Length: 184
Image (cartoon, rainbow, N blue to C red; front, side, top):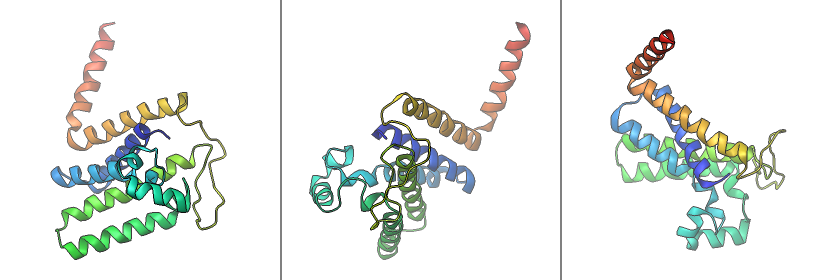
């Protein structure tokens, strides 16, 4: 998937978690930032990715040792990143709000893997076993379906957040649509 689609996928996953957990204010913001950033992390193994170009001192060695869609695209990486982040936050004793940002990183990271799972290249869920898995029906990266998916997930995230923080907007918008339809 393209970086923009990974970002909106992470944001959508974060919005879903914000709604599910009934979060408010800065807790929701921290989780959304974590989820959006976490959605970029798996591609650190590709030196030409958005994140890889900014962190070549990490990206180049990872690509040389594991290749693209290797360990960073596995369930082992999800568990490893979650554990490392949890451990670091416990050691730094930054407070409970950072735990929600860490949960967001985990959700965003997983959203990236699920997105790549739906592409032709698939993901090696069970790394170090190199077999890649993908959905039976996949799509081409950068194709029309991915663009439609980008907009659908963006609208879905907007709906989830509006429904969580300003449900009156949805009710009023629906009432206005009924009034306009009645006039025609």
